[in-house]
Length: 251
Image (cartoon, rainbow, N blue to C red):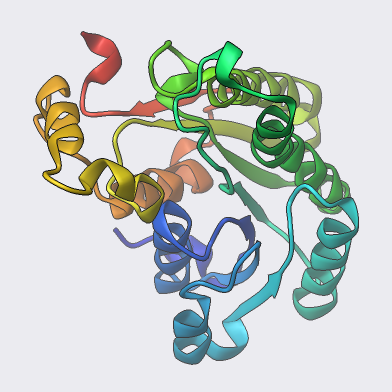
């Protein structure tokens, strides 16, 4: 998928070190964008830095830490002088823990990463977009933000909240040139879901069987939707949530 329009664009993103985030980073770089990434780990970012050099910058930090976020955005602006696209992708799972099995530590860790992180990063980037008069934000939700069963209590709560936040964000700032949309992935074959493939892989097999498409998706399939939502091709899409789930919620 080639989008010529990204050649003069700057992407700021979180969660780029692996999985869906890495696929997104790679896709936007391949399409000519410059990228600044914030992640709690370095992961595979060094590979992209070697390949794309000045067009790919990376800093280690937590999206749940306001100082880390502020410093990352400051460095991105200093290096590239603009941020055109924000990808809020960083997130963690909760092991499908029910509410009585979710202690306060787990709840805070999931909510702070998945939800507070989106709020902190968005609030750090948004003023620069408003000043420029344009900006596109793509938040990573989940089918767990649309239906039950895609995660535990804290994960499901965080992803439902992201969808609501995305809609409100777009409504509040769309007249200032900002577009905000979200993606709701289903079963994606990433390191974060590696536990489902362990041992005899029965859990991964069960998920595939329960998915109408009959398989897990690959990270690049989510990255392709991200490219579309960040492009002019989706310019009239506002506050939208796109399920990419192999038909899971259509059942």
